[in-house]
Length: 272
Image 1 (cartoon, rainbow, N blue to C red):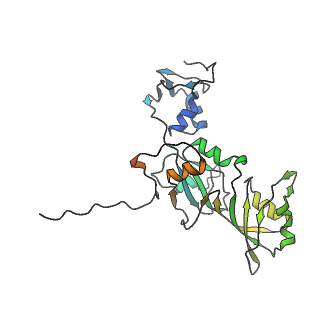
Image 2: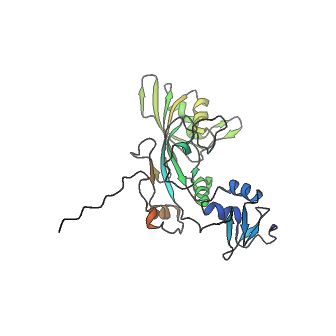
């Protein structure tokens, strides 16, 4: 068995290598290692505390692990009623149950609760996920929020100033009043942190009840006219420009574009 590395400055952790190759998430990869399914240079690992160098050969269940996949990003219009997890202990449907079958293994960037809908970013690369979720990035998450009540500027003032709820301080929100429709009002809203149920909790704190929550933007990425349940890939050039990362373009077989686009048919040949 291969023992943990003493020099962790060389190479990359084996779980990270497996995740980047699209084999499994880091946590799943660690479980695979503990189960004795992963070998390096023909020797089975017994700990995930092992680094992989450029010349190392990695196998899972005896099958070689390929090179890392290019970093990719998709826009997904999440419908309400889906949980943003791979598995749900209550047996509720998840976003992964509804994604197209031709997508590689992907991870959600942030979350939308089961009652929320709209833009959810998906990526196959852990580094891209962390980059997009970092609070220091400060990307604005934009929402359209429907609340029950009659809000005015005085009621929304605490949200704009930054509100503290049960000892937790929320950053100031960008919130305006779009229109009143009977007992409900639509509010365009922007936040930069994306804490757990942040919008719903903040609205409740000022006496408003959210009955619909739609995320329409995440940094430079927009929901636009993407239909509910649809997936669209972000072009590699846009991804590189927006994140400032040097990332290889995907191979021709994985050309960017809508995941559900219809195949192009070749034109029939003219008879000679």
